Length: 359
Image (cartoon, rainbow, N blue to C red; front, side):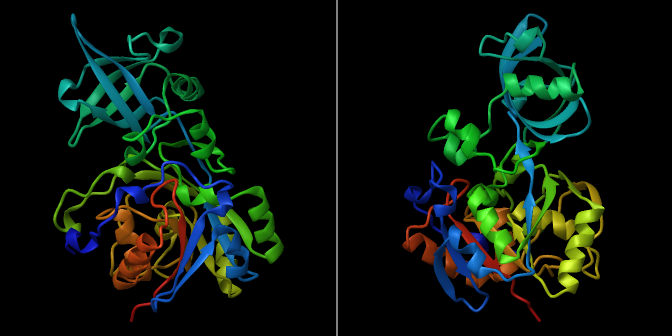
C-alpha cells in the first residue's frame, strides 16, 4: 500500500505536551467499524466492557536510555548521543547514534555528563558494528544489574521527539511517562495507552468482572522512526523483545472459549499477542523478538478490542489501527478527533476501537 494513503493534516496545537490529570480524566473516543463514534472519557471504560472480558496490559518499564558522551579515537574526540532501543544480552544494546557518521566499528565511547566524565568513573562502551540509518551495536564494559543501575543514573528518560523538541524532560516525566503497573525494566518508550490507568479505574474494572493480565514488550525507539519509503512493503520494522507466559496464554484462551473478549491496552500488547497467536487463533507462550508489521489486509487472530492513543500521520501505528477498524473508519475518526479538540500522541487522549471483521 502507498504510505501516502495514511497521511492526514494535524495541527501543532493538537500535540499534548503534558498528560491529563488525573490520568483517567483523558477523553476516550469509542470507534465502531460501521463508523459510529461516541465521545467518552477513560473513566467510562468499565461501562463499555462486559463481565468476562479480559484486558491485557504491557508491564514494561521505561529506562533512562538516552546517553551523551565522547568518542575517543587517538587524540581526537567527538560528542555522541545514543538512544538505546534493543537489548541483545547482558552487556550489549542496539542504539541509534547521532551523529552516526562520526562512528566506526572499534571506536570507544565514554558516556557520562557533558564533559565526558563517566558516572562513578565507568560507563564505557565499544562500537561493535555500524549499520544503516544511524544504528549501532554498543558493547558496554559492565553488564547485568550493574549496567542497568549505571544507565539509570547516567542516562535520561527519552521523551518522544515530538515532545522533546518542544521542552526538556523534567522530574514530573519520571512519574507521568511510566504506567502505574510498570514492572519489567527495558523499554525506551512508554506503552502510552496504559498511562491513562489509575488504581481507582483498575478497581472499577475488576468490580465489573473484567480480568487483568500482563505481558511484556520492551518498546524500542524504532516506534518513533518515520516511514521513509513510498510503499509499506518496503518498510522494515525494528525488532522488540517480548514475553507472553504460558499461564497468561492459557488464561486468555479460556476467556475466548467462554465468550469473553480480549481487549488490548496499547498497540504494543496487541503486536505481542498477535505474534504469540497461531493460525488457529490460540495463544501460546512466547519469549523472543518480534518485528510484526500490521497493515490493512492483516487478519487479526487474538485481539477483539484495542485501546490506544492517537498516532502520527504516515506512521506504522496509524497503519495498524487502520487495519484493525478499517482505513475509512479511522480516517473519519481522526478527522472527528481533530475537529473536537482531542489531544494527540503519547500524553494525549485515547480511543477504544472495535475490530472490523472483513470478509
